[in-house]
Image (cartoon, rainbow, N blue to C red):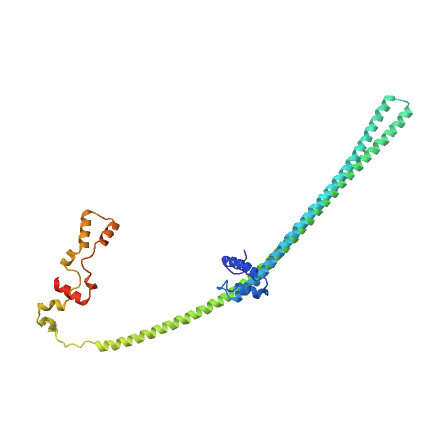
Length: 341
C-alpha cells in the first residue's frame, strides 16, 4: 500500500489522527486548521512535513475515487451490455418460434399433399383427371419444397445475423473492457510517476540532510581530536613540571642499601604500641560474649539451614554491644581499656 514515503505504522497513525482532527475541526478553516490540530499529535514531524503529506494524501484519495468511479462505470456498462444481449437472444428466440410455425404449416401442407396423392391413387379415375391431379400435386410439392427451402434459408440467415450480433456485442464488450483497463493503467502509471517524483524529492532531501550531518560529525570529530591533542599536550607539560619537581637526587654510593634505615636504628618502646596502632573491631572475648554468634553456632550444629528461621532467631537475639566503629571516641577508648586484643 502507498504511504507517501512514510513508514506503514506512522502513515496509519497519521490517517487515524487526521480523521479525529477533521471531526474536531469541523468548523475550522481548511488545511491550516487541520495542521494546527495535527501538530501537537505528531510532534516528531514538522509542520512542512505534515503539509506535504496532507497534499500527497489528498491527491492519493482523489486518484482512488477516480479509479472507483471508473470501476463502477465499467460495471454499469457491462451490465447494460448483458441486458442488451439478453434482449437480442429473446428476439432471436421469437424469430425461431415463428420459423417453427412456418415449418409446421409447410409440414401440414406436405401431409395434405400426401393425403391427396393417396386419394388419387385410390380413386384411379380417368387418365386426364389423374394427370391433372398429379400435375397439381407436383405443383404443390414444388411449392412446399420452395417454402421449406425458403424457411431453411431464413433460419440460416437468422442464425448468421444472431451470431454476428453476438460477435459484435462481444467485441464491443471487449473494447470497453480494454479501454477501461487502459485508463486504469494510465491512472496507475500517473500515480506511480507522482509517487516516484515525491520519493525522489524526499530522498534528495534526506541525502542532503545526511551529507550535512556527516560533515557536521566530521567537523565535531576533528574538533574533539584537536581538543584531546591539546589536552594531551597540556597534560604532558604538567607531568614534565611535576617530574622535574619530584625528581630523586641520590648520592652515588652502592653500599647505601646495606646500611640500616633510620626507623630501624631508632629506639623501640613496646609500651606505646597501643597508642601507635589502635585496634578497631571485635576481640575474641567480645565475640564469644555475643549471643548471636552462639545462636549461629548452635543452629549450625543442629543442622538448621532455613534462612527464615535463622533470620528470625538472630532478630530476636539482642547484640552484646554495638560495633566499635559505631561507638563514640570516649566509648571506644573505654572499650580498649577493658579488653586487650
